[in-house]
Image (cartoon, rainbow, N blue to C red; front, side):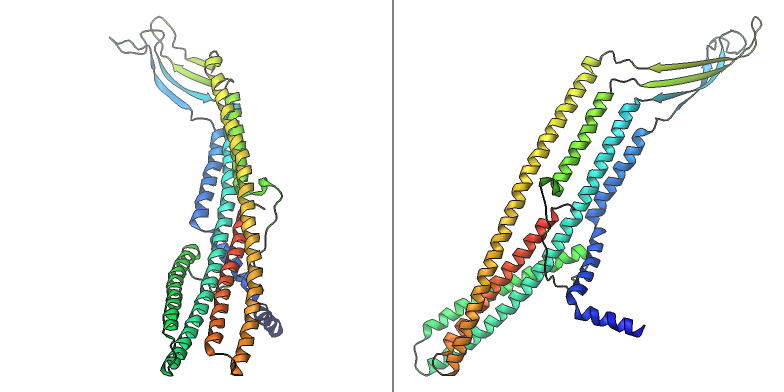
Length: 399
């Protein structure tokens, strides 16, 4: 047992990526209970219940009363038709209409389920993007602080040269301007970090101590793989049921009614009780001016939703391809910056050796270091953008 526990501990710390993935998944579970997701799921449950309710019958009507009671001398044994009445009436709306309405509500409920999945994906993407952005800000803050250290060394170096009689006043002004820009960048980064931490607290209730090592691209085949298009397709299916509702409206609505009449015996007649039953059904006599226009309207609405669905497919193909183009361009820029950083590292090492041999000035060495730190800051920005774009694209892809 001790060996097994030790093995788990060693495995956990020896595989930080695996450990981080496990922690990341636990935060994804938290996002599943986010109010934005729960609101959509509650809407889905409402529509599911409405689907069940659509199949139900309206409440029966209970009838209590008296029939044919004389006004001048109220009694139950004076006239033959006088009676006490108890009965009920049950309306039975068109069954085909109720089934189509139920199916329509189920399609809308299914749409909300897809919307909930999309919302979860978007929240996961936002969470991942905020973690990436936080790491980017931390990196850029560290690089900017290192630049300020180098600028402080430059200032000390120029003071020494100035004291020795060299006219380097212009370099003081240049260093001040460049250092001011870095200080402004640090202020902006501090503000950005506060904003990111607030967003993370809003998402999961805390600022996780996590690092996103990589984000893998999800594959897609066609526009129907995208969540917004899936949602538009569910709208189309729901409206198809709306057409069925209109098509079924030509059918009849029914009702049944039964009454029991209690009579008292009179001087000239027996007090036998009476019983009556009626069944009614509607006749679509005015179909051409009632149901037919509603059917045409429902079909026109279906056509409009179908056009919206086709438009959504085109729009999201364009949107995703645009995002992929930005992603690929950002990756190319990363390769360029990595190569440039490598070149500056070699240059910096060369200048360091030259400086140590007394063949160049400290000015050249520190300027080279500052330039490399600037490139590394750009590289941190591009890496964040690249993985953030992958995460955003993934959030639109339905599995």
